[in-house]
Length: 381
Image (tube, rainbow, N blue to C red; front, top):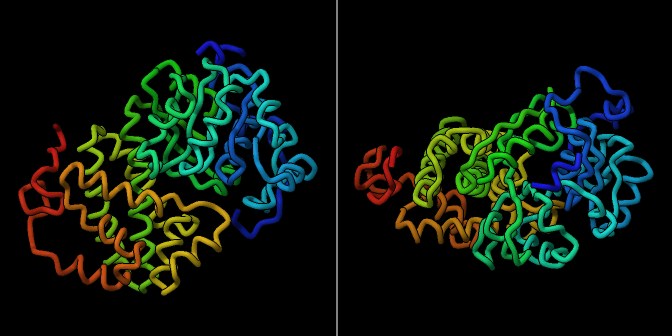
């Protein structure tokens, strides 16, 4: 905590106006946090968008990436050409491939590296990261090899305890850069840290709520990507609103049962990290995971889809862990298992729909025989 006290899409051309360079009441931060030096690990669309938010709030931002061409473009043209080529970044957002330089004197770290790459990334940088510098993870997923969510993975990779918080919620990077009003939630077991992060990031365009339910925020953020693949597949098959709404509703139930079984709070799953992010990811055409499902429904092969994408769809590796979590909790989770079967090429998406619709009839609620199984904990458990 001591460190904090240191005071890809869219048709529009890059904007030449930058509120970071021309402060205005419309974009002024609403928090009371003094300007900070912030490092952002990862130069994908979301890390870049958060750099935009932080700079508008008066903070100094350095993006840490691997691609020298992208780094040079950010520094010279103030555009991330790979992920957000139509949006201008403030001049105060800089980039580097040198993590040591980026971490010099920082008060906060935003971790925006894909989950499956995060352990090795953080393990390598551990000697450069001060033990009292808070890390805010925006990576959503479950590490397959380590079988960990980010709240477990970060201390394991660093080899020590570290102040951490976890940001999630319905937030497409492009719309953040467009300054569309956006609301998210930050979770931490340290209430003071959560409040500080809330004030650092919040503005009239970007509203941050707080919670102490780290498990709920993390599991909701990870598992909603699996449901989004299913939603995309339904759309790709040409089914309409009846089918998509039924799929997402029952998918929400599976997510809720699974997360509750692992200690999440029901109110978190009904909030921004749960229901909010599910709606965005399942219905929003900018969703990478929905896109994977849509293209599967259109008949493309998974390997071809993944190879053609320039960003990671975390739902693909997370599905395997979602099935394991369901097994551990003795839950049926038929939609999650159907997505897994499709990703494993054991079932065509249309066959998966037929299989789901042909399951034995049962009650909608928690009674034995329901889709979650009799072991699904009551909402108020």
